[in-house]
Each structure stands twice: as structure tokens, then as C-alpha cells.
Figure (cartoon, rainbow, N blue to C red):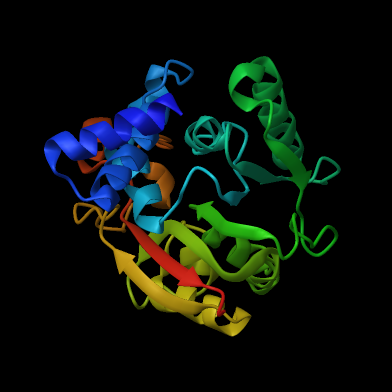
Length: 273
């Protein structure tokens, strides 16, 4: 109640439209989460390339929504922003990897993510983790009840594993009518179609559009928040040549540091009402 009183007072004094004040409050909360003390300096240094507050705000996130994050990875980079932001009024469901996967990296990433949440309950105690691994574990939670699905830098993996159609279908099913899919992924040029390119991390926008629309989504908009025109997309180890991975080690490190993280598409889709 005190917060609402002060917000109304601020709107009155500054003669601001209520919608403007609420919008400013929303992005301020996102920025606070993105720069919170619970985040390492290494993770916060990625904010300059990933623009988490601006990206999530553009997707239309609100702190009272039910949100599903697809494959947060072992480090949970975006979960670090979403969990504290949604903790008091919303819900965060994390679709993690299969704990029984034959792929060791996936099993270890799942464990690392769960260990991370357990180590800081003041931030992560309300995150609901479940396993998602089409075709064996094909369903997302809470089916048909989510307001928003978010996925970051994952589409190339789904194409590589021949599960992209299943994942997009599951994302469609988990959303309420009118629910939003917010997607960020490494952006390839138009000719970069097929596994030769997705194995380097790059996917053309047209391929993402096709996958989303075939699943039933309607395209809403796209933004250049996460664009990087310096990314020439011809690196020997694909997107992982660039920071933060630096797969070539010290070889040409300054060159790749100057480029920054990969060029990324940022797109918004909706499940028709």
C-alpha cells in the first residue's frame, strides 16, 4: 500500500501519465535484477551485449506473469534476472535438461542449474524446475496456463537434434491464448540454412519464422536490441569463436573481443486468442 501511495504521489507531482510511470517502474525493476548483488561480475559484464532489461521489457513481461524459460543452461544466465523479478508476484518455470540423458553435458548442466538454485534460496526458492527433452519428455509445464515463454540462444540446438518442430509445438501448447513467445537466437544470413550452419550456431530469421508459424504462432514484431553488425559470421568455430566462449583460446582473442557477442535476432510471437 505504501508503494502505491508514493507512486501516485510521484505521478501527481511530475504530472506523468500513470502508464508512463508504471512502464518506468517495470524496466527499473528489470535493471535492478540484472545488476543485482546475487550476480557475478562475469555474468553482469554480459549485460552490455545481451541487454536483458530492455529485451524483457520489449517482450512485454510483467512481474505478475507466469513465465516459462526454455533450457536456462547450467549457469542460468537469464534465470538470474527472471527469478528475483518474478519472485513475489509471478511464477517462473524452468524447462531444464534431462537428468537421465545419454549426453553427459546435459546431465551435468541440469545438476549445475539445480545446485545453483539450491545455493541461494533467497532468490531462487520459488523457481519451478522440470525436465524437458523431446521426444522422450515432450511436455512443458504448466500446459495451457503460461502467459509467456522465453528462449535464448537455443534454436540451433533444436535444429541440430531434429527436435525444432516438437519444441515449437510444445511452446505453443504451454501458452494461454494470447500468450507471448519471446525469442532471441544467433542470427544467420539468408543462405545459412541447414545443419552445416546451425552447428556453427547460426539460424536465418526466415527459418525461425517458418518454425513458429507452422506451430501455430503469429508473428508480432522484431527489434534490433541484440543486433551486432560487427559479427561477420565466418568464424572458424562459429558463434563460440566469439566471447564469452573464445573457443580458440588466446588465438586472435583481441580481434574477437572487439567484435563482441554474436549478432542476434529478437522476435516476438503470439498464440492467437
